[in-house]
Length: 291
Image (cartoon, rainbow, N blue to C red; front, top):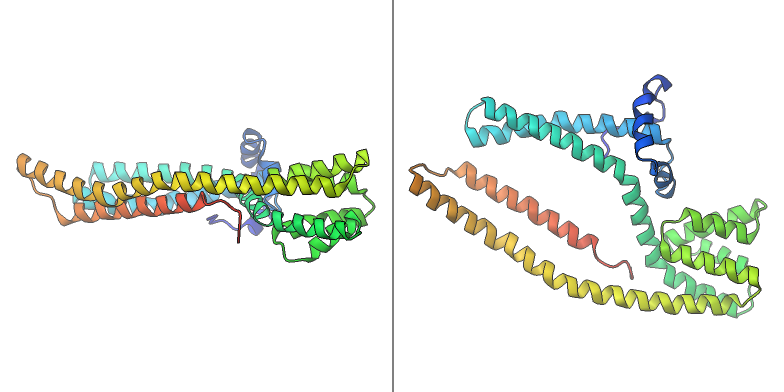
C-alpha cells in the first residue's frame, strides 16, 4: 500500500534524510524489522518514503471527505470543509503509522509462513538424519526442497557455512534473524545439542512432538474463538444496519425532518466496510498450520 516506490526512495539525496532519520530514531526497532521482513532499504529512507506516501493519501482523502460532506450536509460549507480536514489528517496519521509498522507486520507474516512449513521440513530432516546423513547435508537438502520460506532460511544457513562460517555460528545467525519463535527455538536446540555432543535426532524428535501439540492447541483455540466472531459478525452485518435505519426513520419522523436516500446509502457503505474489515480480521487469525 506504499504509494511511493521503494526503489525511488533508495535514490533520495542525503540533504532530505534528516526527517526520516528523526522518525527512525523514534522507532528504533525499524532497522531490525526491515531486515527480518527482507526489505532492502535504509530505515531513514524508508521513513521518508512512508511520510511522502502518507501525504499522498492525505491529498486523496480530501476528495473523499468532500464527497461525504456533500452527501451529509448537501452543500459545501464549514461542516464539509471540517469533514475534509478531519478525513485528510486522519488518513495521513493512520497511513503513516501503518507504513512504519508494516515491516513488523511483514516479518510476522514471514514467521507465519515459516511455522506453516516447518513441521514438514523437520520431519524430513529427521528421516534423513536417521538414515545416516549429517546435519549440514540434511539442511542443504531442505534448502533445495519445496518448503517455502523454511527452504529460503536454510539456504541462507548453507551459504553462510559455505563461506567459511561454522554450523553453530550459522544457526546462531538464523536464530537472531528469524521472527519465528518456533524456528528460533529449534535453531537454539540444535546449537545446544551440537555443543554438548548429544543426539540431534532426539532433539529434533522432541521439537516435532512439541510443534504438533502446539498446532493442535492453536486449532482448538481458533475453533472456540470463531464462535464468538460469528455472533459478532451477524450482529454487525444484519442487526445493526437494520435497527439503525429503523431508529433514524423513527427519530426523523418525531423531529419533523426526513431521512434521505443518501443517509441510507452511507449506512450501507459503512456496514460493508465494517464487514470487510471483520472478514479480513478473522481470516488473519487462521492458524498457519497447513497449506
